[in-house]
Length: 167
Image 1: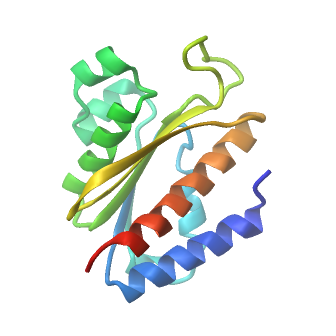
Image 2: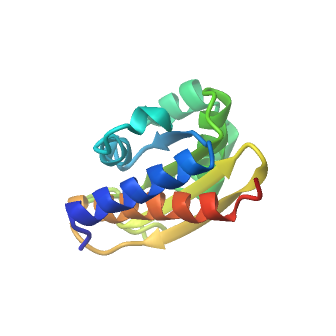
């Protein structure tokens, strides 16, 4: 289980890296429902590096707010790396940020299937100067634990992406 203090520490580390590298961040969240943005804005001074977050829980909001293609949603489903990429790219296009991350998944306790069981979460991390990076994880736990593990993965992925950028 991911504890709150650890999540805050990760957000502080991310903020320091973004400030050092003069980068800014936007988020596109579905199954986490704004948890990633909440963790990030715990950090005093986060307004210097965090621009905005999109909470797009429904497919309709993904299409309207982030320009996710209805064809992508129909073909791959909302819980897919393809949708995660379009969410991350859409968030970048709708903000002045240089980095974005997206998360879409099934936190449970219902909604899973044989192909995409509860705990299936897809991620994408994008930058204005590199191809998106994706991942799919299968978390175990209750709804809150899955959401916390997802938020941790988002922030850790942003740290990794930030460190890998050739500025």
